[in-house]
Length: 403
Image (cartoon, rainbow, N blue to C red; front, side, top):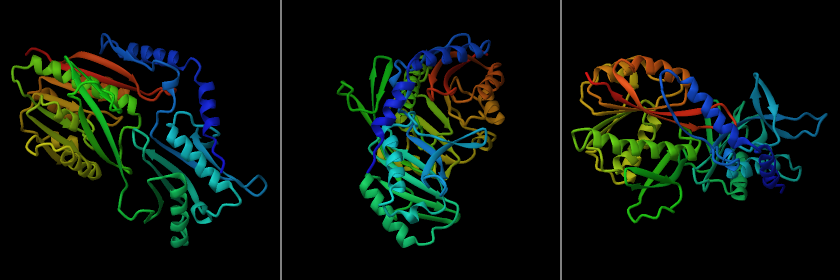
């Protein structure tokens, strides 16, 4: 069976020349675009060309079917200007996805292999891995329902075994097939964190030297959102935990209360709870899949149920009736930014500090203007969210102005 992993990696390395310089320039330009709302930014670009690639742990591709006039092979494509463009390499995917995606295609295009049901009316494929790349899940999307489900399952089991996939899922309208009939696949991950003075270190590897290092375990539903770049995720978490240390030192109360909106599966909630710095966390999330995942992760990590409360509701609607008192507000909204009612809640409430994680510049600037009458930017740190693209993650700490 053909496995073009080495070929794909070398193509990525050829393309990588000077990418870390471009990463530095991208963040510099982005920082200048935030003036006058932010006076100065700390930038964390990619340090080397190598880390500009092999980082994405979730990738989707359109499937293009060749006709009989050509070789008849299936190919991956990405959309550009609303048209599919076939690709021969995708070096931003992590190595597990690169290996799996090309091996799946090699099996499909090998005339000696029997994967007719898996290929029939196939329109796209999604590859998802754990942050540490130990688990890989493949989802095949179909235009029409599978005609022979028994044959599909046999072929899918064969592919899973040969490619060491945790699960292969087939999706069509109103029908989902899985190699393991256990419902949504759960992707498992562990991160490690330790406090060093007023700073926190976060790593995917158990290499932190302190005996006080803390393990944080996650169960993440494969079909719901989780951070697709583990490096950026760890950097953002280090920033957040370190800011919390400074905030606690600034506040008169020794154990402040935190309100978290758009909490997802608890990627931030669980580490925050494990710092021992907070007396209460109220976490808000709309997606029921992520609410269940966060609740499971609270149990998985042995966190006292009195420390974290979960609310399943839209952040904007919940903020309109918020009556509780909190010291810190943490928000990690989608690209469109904060609901206006969330901004009104922030400015009119008792929050002394606000941590804002943003992946959209225009929405961030709009929200900083809304918040500017009550809050001043204390710190802004920029991460290269998706190297080789224009995406930047902004980490902003705002402190309430003296009334």
